[in-house]
Length: 221
Image 1 (cartoon, one colour):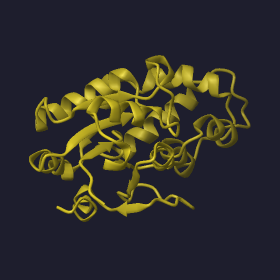
Image 2: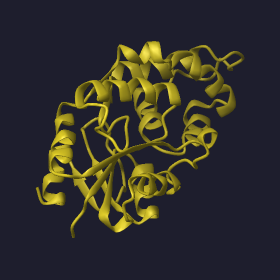
Image 3: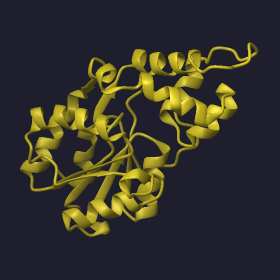
């Protein structure tokens, strides 16, 4: 199979967020929710990682943190800010592979569910390293941007339309369950990059790689 376009998720796929930051945000959010009963115990690191990497986060908040999801998200936004993330995010070392893709004529896009201000921060990091023409499309898959969230395929479909690429000619690379499912729902090849930060159970991805250079075999480079 020959491909001519690669789409990426953002956080955890090409941008790294430190473990300390993930745990800092979640633990401080829980600590500052008013009215929590004393019986609610601090979240374990395992549950915090489950929240960060898995989908269905509202269910995780309710089942593992024993907190109303609406209350959680209201406080969460006070801690997960651009200013706080700026000191805790960086591109993965294999980010140079995106330049290799461009050199070989591939179209490159981003489909992410991150908040708008976080996307702006992280895309600036990427543009500074790779150039402002590194990506042909950046799609934010969130209801307030008019695009349904992953695993709905709408974000990937829109990215394909922006890049003028057929779904059979593209792949989508992500680091989580919702990424794999969104790619399959969109009819593009799903690729899961496993960076050793979280172990997924029962996640059946079509292709699994340990870093972006693993795409060379997939793309015939």
